[in-house]
Figure 1 (cartoon, rainbow, N blue to C red):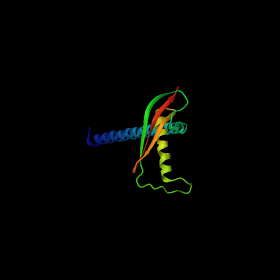
Figure 2 (cartoon, rainbow, N blue to C red):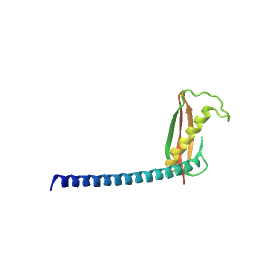
Figure 3 (tube, one colour):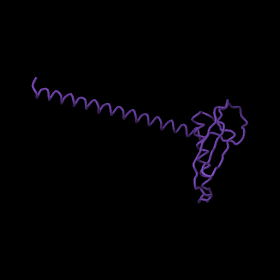
Figure 4 (cartoon, rainbow, N blue to C red):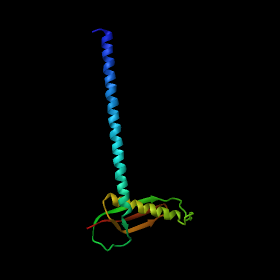
Length: 136
């Protein structure tokens, strides 16, 4: 076999290899897209579940099992108690974010409520925690 034949053969091998690599990349992209779509569906389900979770600073009048402690910290450096157009303060907004984060944590645990919730406001952080429970 001469130089030209070996060169053509090598080019064909490289073209075939490039074709295989492109096909593999395409498959990987399709799999990644499916995973992203699945994660989006799961995230939406978690957010829907979180919106239904009850938060109480005390006990609830329903039978439940304790699942876990849920805890969240938000940095709030420099927040002042200034009212916005809708009448809420920046601290109210941070409180709602902390509450939402607790609900998301509980939803991931497949819980129905968070009881004995506490919020502690330090100079630079808002700590929130409670007991995540599941109805029986």
